[in-house]
Length: 241
View 1 (cartoon, helix red, strand yellow):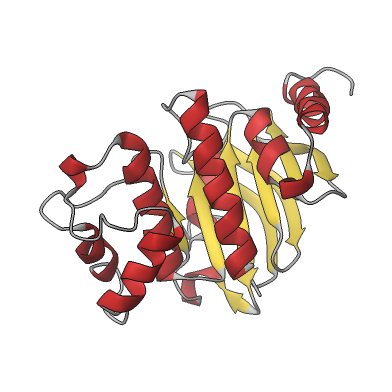
View 2 (spheres, one colour):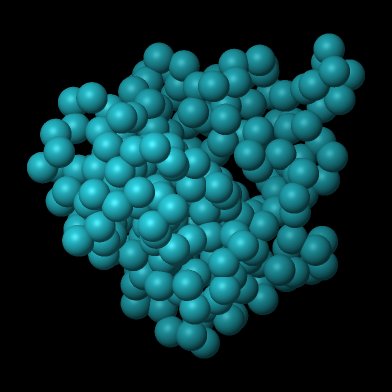
């Protein structure tokens, strides 16, 4: 079971407080939910993710994860746009390197969970781009099985590969039941993966839509995904939904 998450941001600014990026942003995230932060590039989604991760504490407000301030909470499992694998380490070693308590046996199980059984001792250059992204998912799960932060992990891949990775993501979520914050600029990603979508827009960015979904992402039909995508697109573009 993933932790609950409470975000209460009065404002987040850069440039010695002269450029406000986020303002009056309040979210209560339920345990084991998948919340997608949707909005255009540069709106502040990744900034908010770093704040939730406890990496950036320069803001007014509070972020609490499972009753603990974000800066003091256990590190989240983090996946980025770039897999960020260490090229001189094998698949197993890339996982154990980020958390020494992870045994090679557990790392191998996680590698198998993302469909890479047989590649435990492969180096990153021996893996395709999609395989590297799968390994990055396994690494995130190894760091923290109950709380994940994903920053555009499906960009720069063809749609077939994206669909395969997203299926793998949903399988991992079903197995571990983490709380997930997923940053994406693509409404379709939120429509396919999230239990709730929060749309950010403006400068400073504010929440312009907060949409919970009744259906399990694994059970959504292509038609439902298209309908949710269209709705989120209208909000993201500032049109009436």
